[in-house]
Image 1 (cartoon, rainbow, N blue to C red):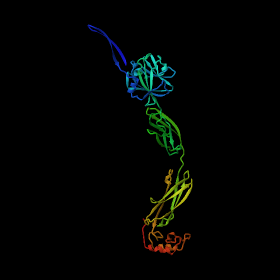
Image 2 (tube, rainbow, N blue to C red):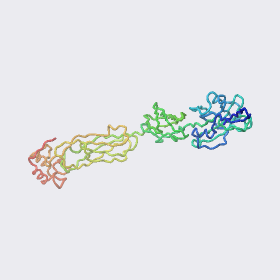
Image 3 (tube, rainbow, N blue to C red):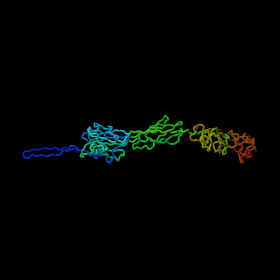
Image 4 (cartoon, helix red, strand yellow):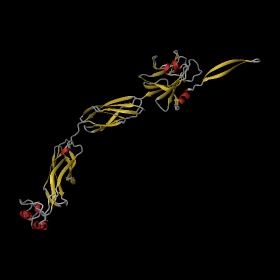
Length: 436
């Protein structure tokens, strides 16, 4: 507190009196009181006189100097007397500054801070440099922000009295550049494959990342607030992927890496044909569905072929290790169910292979098939004399005989047409149905 001593003489008619009294001019806070008012309560004194190279933000909070308009603050390279101005006197003002004033500066050298007063005396955070041999600065670390120091300067020359270190109060805080490292998965991607790029250690440096800007090197880019993005390359090659990150302090960092996109292995199977051994059959008989499939891709394939009547599945054929260029014929034996007679069904096959480059040739449609009533040997929709005649032509034949007709083989023992087969026609004689 600065004080003025005033002496007065009071004269009365009887007794002359002389007396002195003290008038308080203005109460100023101590450095710790000022820091507490500014919200810095969790602090600890530090024996710091110089600072390492880096990027810094210096914020001036208060000046309680009688000649505040003349105070200047600079930084200098340790071991030199070259001073880089940060604040000139008129920028501040007496008391707490509202709002505080901030400056950003970058150094490539170790530096100290210097206060120049009244154009006469210069004081330093390196106290051994002070011209009067006194300490002129106090430094505290902000325990709530490990990157911030709080500094108070004293501008009184050559006296141990009134050393309150609040003639200039400011903070100095390192500005930390964010990390722009990133990885991708899978590590060896191929063309048309989805690649996930992930920025690693997004919180490194203490200040949060607010933007990730990606350049994928193929003419495509993406800016997002999330550390992870996906991208697919249409062509193989080496791509220069660049990530630029920006943190909440406005600082940016970038990194580029070469991502090699390999040629994808071509998967391509084709169903070349599907045939059935008969376009009609009795209920409970076996119909052979023959499928021809070929591997037109670049690696051996294992997959399933699904066979349908219209959209209803009638069987699945597993295909194992179909080699490159191989053409394979597969037969599905389908036992005909009790379907409505003479209703036509379309038989088709579809091959399921993930990543097939040409899925349009993975399906094939054969034609139509229907189940007929027993005894309709010639498949005209009715049982009559013509069926008996057709069966009689095949009488006493076996599958190796030229007159063999499997449609006349109606009764056990199967594989031999005899009188039992002809008799089996008689219960259905005269019946008729129409194809639908």
